[in-house]
Length: 342
Image (cartoon, rainbow, N blue to C red; front, side, top):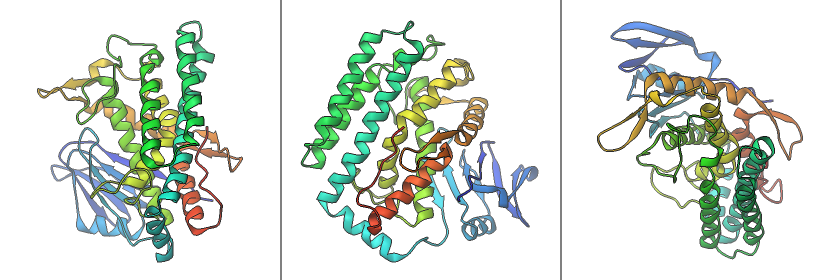
């Protein structure tokens, strides 16, 4: 059984990562700030353009510890990985499948069905838990429309039709997202999804958490031997982890969105932790980013029932198990890719 190890998030500005024996050492102005044993780590995520020594990068590659560099607001920069896992036949199957439109359509239908189903369930859960505080009729209409979209997916004959239904479903889901924000409405409100850069506090949170989740999925895909850059729904583009972006669709609403809503509704963060730059971009300050990262680590330790495996699994392992199921499908061990239904 795979064990969920820790992720080390380095947010301190002007830090440098080095290797000392069996430890990663964080240096600030040539002074040791912290050291963490490598055997406790599954990945290292570094913000603020932090540098790392070649010795540390080599040791991380040797130990299969993914070393990822992000900007301070979570935009992906680079990832250091070791030898390719799995065998060449699996990746050959993946490349062949990605060029087969029928297979791409089948996989994409399954993924987007799960996305719409899980988005609908988030809304239904809100109606159940907060029905007296919400416009239940409005939410129910959106929930029913998502259910209809799932049925429409089955008759799609090409990827553009699937993308169209996915886009319409996402718009309907986000049309009631602001209703799910129950606290701190003066600082956290949602009008529409915006990014590159995000221009309000909620979108800044969503973009940041989506990046964390996509990074986890990309690492999981590499672990099972798949190429995270070759997808089935998202088209290939240099530098884009298309397969990770495929699989994230199943988990956006139930994992990332609910996590963001919980941070706001339980007042773990506040509006004072966000700054607006001259270009309109909104970013988190360092203290808020640390709160989000600590909470994210805790969230990944929580258990959920896997609908296919019929066992309780930590949320942090869901990307790994879905990657494993994708590899089994591409090998021909199972008849179709089973997405994650909450």
